[in-house]
Each structure stands twice: as structure tokens, then as C-alpha cells.
Length: 275
Figure (cartoon, rainbow, N blue to C red):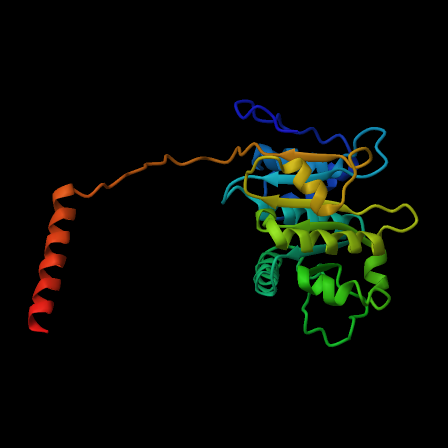
């Protein structure tokens, strides 16, 4: 659902309780109203929080913009809205253990600078899990795709309290799930949905990454989304300020290359004479 890049999405209207609540949470982070958010952030939030009329499942949102466009800020507001506002749980899946560690540390730093540091209950699940689940469990859980595969899914019964309230799955770095890694990740995502989507409940996906072509079929394959019942909204219009780019090409003079070849040949000849 890509729009014309020359036409940025219009500002969103705060016509639902969840959008108004998200605006208040963003304001508490020093964001002076959603008008100070970039248009692509506003469009992604509206798609995330306002269901499509008549849809039986929530809209899955894919934000594909460049570096420095505020994808982490968007995800942070979405986490707060889902946990503090709705009382639900969030799972953030990273490509590797190191990525999960770094993402959790950045999240803690951002949380500590906010007014909600006392209320946010987060944690990280590693492949070296010691078998203990906090009581109550973390509301925002950071985990690598391997930890989801090796720990969370096989021990779903131990994590039942967390999984029963799991409502949003956030997947940064979408571009890193190509090839064999993507095939393996798709199997993990399918198993995760199988253990969480019971009694008609559907989890929602927020994925972020760099711009790419053919994202809709890629996202549907990765997250096992159906063509009829699962709506995917791709927000690919980067409305963040774009600095001027200067490209320079350096082509060495041909005589320099010839001179280098001559020097090398003379050196080899001298070595042969000495031998």
C-alpha cells in the first residue's frame, strides 16, 4: 500500500480514545503533540491503533524508512500505549543475541529518561535462560529469534501468564531476514502464532526496516499472514529531513597505473637477477 512519494500522508486526526491516549504518552516523552512527529510516524501509529472497518484482525504495520527517521521512537510509543494504556504485553524480536542485548539497553536508557521509568516492567530473554520466570512476568520482553525458538515456545506453559496477554510483536531490522535466515525465522513466527493465537485472539505485528521492493509478499510469508483476513499496511514515505548528498568518483590516471606496472616488473626482474 505504497503512496506516491511526492504526496506525504496527511496529519492524523485524534478521533479515537487510543489515539488520544497515545498522544498523551508521546507528550509525556517531550514530544509536543503528534504534530511534532513526522508524517510517516503519524501514519504508522494510526494504522497500528485504528482497525480497518469490518476487519476481523488488527492491521499489521510495516514502516520502511531510512536511518534517523524515528523508527525507535515510534516503537517506544507503541510499547507504552500497549502496556500502560491497554495492560497488554509486547515481544520485541531481534536477529541475534547481541542485537537483543543492545536493543534492551537502549530501551532502558530511553525509559529512564522518561516519566514512566517506575511503571515500565521490561526484561530480556536469552538462550541461556535459567528456567525462572519473574512474577509478575515482564510486560515488554526483548529476545533474539533463537531465544524465541529455543526457550519461549518450548516452555510456553511456563510463560503462560506472559503469552496470554501478548498483544504486539515488534520486529526491527526486517531487511536482515532474507534467505535461509528468513526461512528459519518464518518457521519460528508460525510456531509463535500457534501458541499465542488461541480462542480467536490475534497478535499484531509492527515491523521496521529499510525501504525495499515487494515487501507485502515478503512480510506475509515471514509472519504467516493470510491474503484475505490479514491486512498489511506498508508505510514507506520517509518524511524526515533529507540532507543534501554529494557523490564523488575518483578515477586514477592511466599513466599512474602503467607506472605502477612498470615499477613492479622492474622489481621482479631485479629479484630474478639477484637469485
